[in-house]
Length: 602
Image 1 (cartoon, rainbow, N blue to C red):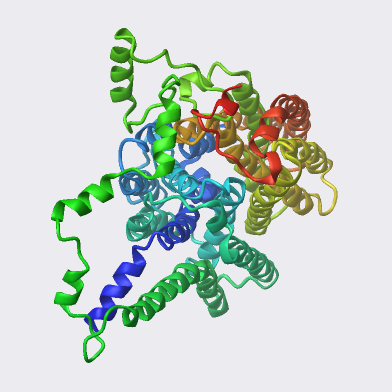
Image 2: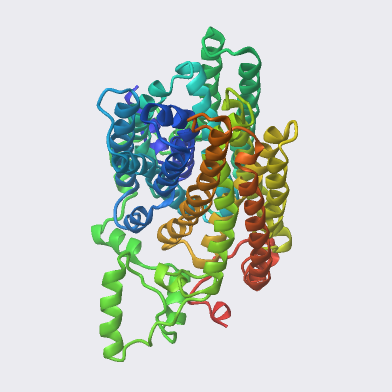
C-alpha cells in the first residue's frame, strides 16, 4: 500500500502531468476571476438601498472595470514571487472588497460615503487581475506552442463565469443579491486557497505534447457542453421561474459536475504513469522473489563516486556547439532570472570591453514594458482593444438598466445570453485565429476587425428597440466582445514575447476600464440621467428611472461609431504585422525566436 502511495506521489509530480493539472486548476480559478460580471446581479439593489442615481451607479460600474483590469502591480510581481502568492493576494482583495459591499447592501452597517463604496468595489473586483495574471502567465509559459488555443480556453471560462454565477444566484441563493455578495466575500477566497497549490511553473510542454491525445479538444468540448447546458437552464428558469424550486438546485449541482470534468485529464495521466512505473519494476534485476537486491544494484553504480558527478556535469554535444557558436556573437539576452543582476553585470562587462552593447529587441522577441511603449504596434493594439472592449463593457455595465428601460422585470436571461455568447467568442476566437495563423500565417488581429464590424450592427440593433433586439443584440455583442480578449492575449505574446508578458498584458487590459470610464461613466450615465429628468418633468414625478428606447439610443449610435474606428485601426495593424507572422509561422508551425540565431537577427 505504501508503494502504491509513493507511485501516486511520483506520478502526480511527473513533468507530463503537472502542466495539465495546472491548466485544470487554472480553468476553475478563471471561473472565480469572472466575479466582476456579478455587477448587474446586485447593481439595482445597490442603487435602491443607497438611493444612487444612474450616473453614480455607472461610475460604480467604472470602479468595477478599473478593479477588474488594472493589474500592473500583479504583472510586475508575477516575475518576482510564485503564483500561489499572487493568488493569495487576490483572495484577500476579494474578501475585503466584497465584504464591505455586502455589509452595506445587507444594511448590517450604516451607509458609507460614496467614495468608500467606490474604492471597496474597486478592491473586490481587483482580485480578478491577480487571478488572471497568475493563471495566464503561468500556463502560457507552460504551453508556449499553443498560445491561441490556450488563451481561448482560459479567457473563455472567464466569459462563461457570468452564466455560472447566474446559476449560483438562481439555484443557490434564490435571486437574493445579499446572499450572492456574501458568497463573493467568502466563497471565492476559500476556493482560491484550495486550488492555488496546483498553479505553478513547470517544464514547458513541447510542440507535440501540447496537442497530445487531443486534451485541448477535450477541454474545449466539455466547456461547450457546459455553455449549452447553462443556456438551457437559463431559458427554463426564465420560462418557469424555478428560483425557489428544488429543480434549480439540481441544475446547480450538475453545473459543478460539468465544471470539474476536465480533471479527467490529469487523472488519466496519473493512472498511465502509475501503470508504466508498475510495468518497469519487473524489468530490473531480480533475486529469487523478483525483487532487486541492494548489492546487485550497487554493483551497477560507478566505483568512483566523483565520476557520476563528472558525467552529469558534462554538457551534451548540442550545448557545446551552441556555446562555441556564441563565442563570436554579442551577448543579446540575459541568462539570469533577475533583470537587475543582469543589467549590472552587462554594464560592467561592456566597460571592460568583454561584450558588445545589447541591441534593442525586434518584433517577436522579448520586450520589457518600457521598450514596448515606444512601438507603434503596441499602441495600435491598445487602441483597437480599447474600442472593442470599451463599447462592449458599456452595454454590460448598463445591462440591468437597459432591460428595465425596455420593460423587462428580470434581466438574468440577458446576462446569461451575454455570458455564453462571450464564452463562445473567446473560445472560438482562440481556435479560429490559431487555425488560420498556422495554415496561412494570417495575423490574429484580422478577427478583431471582423468582430468590431459585427459590433456596429449589434449596437444599431440595440438602438432600434424592435422585438427581440435585446436578445439578439446580447448574443452578437457577447460573441464579438469575447473575440477581443482571445485575440489580444496571444497577439501581445507573439509580438512582444513571454518574458515580461505579465506587465505587457496588464497594461493592455487598462483599455477596458478606460472604455468604461469614457463610454459608460461619462457618456451612457449622463445621457440616461438627462432622459430621466425629461420624463420626470413631463410626468410631474420624482422618479429617477428612465423608461423607453430613448434612454440609451444616442449612446448606442456613438458606440457604433467607436467600433467603426476600431475596425479601421485593426485593418492597419494587421497590414503592419503580417511580415512578423510570416516569420513566426513559416511552414505552419510556431517558431520561438532565438536571439543567438543569425537568421532571426537579419
